[in-house]
Image (cartoon, rainbow, N blue to C red; front, side, top):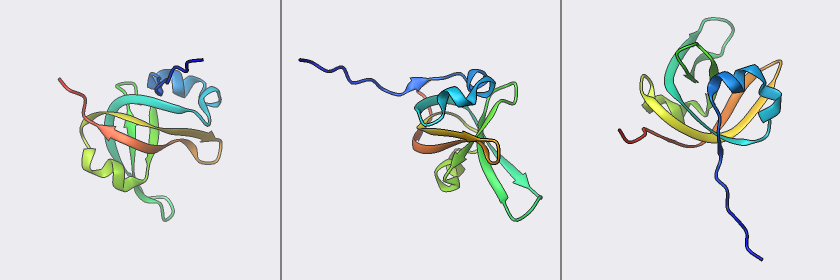
Length: 100
């Protein structure tokens, strides 16, 4: 019996934004630009998101993993989660700039 190791599923950010419940709990691969968001509401401070050209966004956690990539195009792999209270978020496993 052989097993086939499968990597994370590459998901376009617009598809993830359209149906986040379908990907909750899955390990996914996303590509886009890392952007720093300043949050002046409450004590959240700043955080980092990955987004496409249409402003489909997913928060990246922890912030320390994403911060060095602010302003850059990246591929990020991690565990995706969604709920109405906190929105879309990804626990980063790996983050890298794709080869040109």
